[in-house]
Image (cartoon, rainbow, N blue to C red; front, top):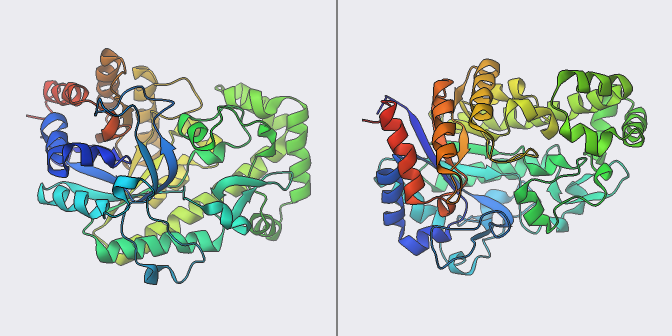
Length: 413
């Protein structure tokens, strides 16, 4: 293998490891896919593959599920946040420290292990004062505001706990998630599944976040929040929001929109600055724990960054490597090989960081498109790659496709 070439696998659905046995699953990743890095989920809210993937690795399972924290947390680490972790509710996992079982075996097999932390938590509606708030004052269900101090402290508590109790090579932060899409009509597959809907019934109530914390900080920065709200409501009246804006792909469309609704850019700049602030503080916090830790970001591609309240070039300053998600989008999926290659090229130009694209190789994906997508990524100077979306949904055959392509390109020997 080329020196330091990153071949990753991410895992949210832990029952696949129980079905096969942890050791056998890790062996499969290595032998069939050449995997040398494991992104192992620390937490999530409820999600399942039922609506968006027709097959799993285990033919006896029609779908797989995840819900809650996968590691055995110690509440002593969570004294500086009001938010408390909740153990996974998947029956086969509740009495296990599946995170430890998998990470221990992976380390013995010389894989690098990253704790994959997501901005999605179980039972969060009990913390109503920390939820995102829509433009009309309504609470956005199931999602914390990134800007709330208690949420920042929660992440730091998780990092403290994982750092002290588990053997890791670093962290992967998946904090710019699907919930930033409120204000659009279409929902990504995972968000639709979590909420039990395909489309947000009143999408214009999004354009988050107008919680007390965000509003006060915006005012302190000299932003006229009421004027921003008026402009965004004008955008709704003109029909830009939600239907037209989420389909924008060309610069001229966006320029016309911003001429009509300049307040959109004001609020986008404010919100994206807060997302960068969160990532910068966590990056420095992790590095102060252990300078040898590597910090990765699991984020959307640069072409869609504005739809997720972020600036790709700025957030890229807060990490050591980036995994752009080329398998999750409001666009038609999976992305074409040409779109994947273009996404890699733009990401490298904007970030000057190691780029390890996440490319869909689900069981029932088109085999030629899988191969061509990975080839396109590599031809555009990807520094590695991540077999996506999840080990539980990827066949040995598809992993073999990638391994053979890597051998053909003389990356694996």
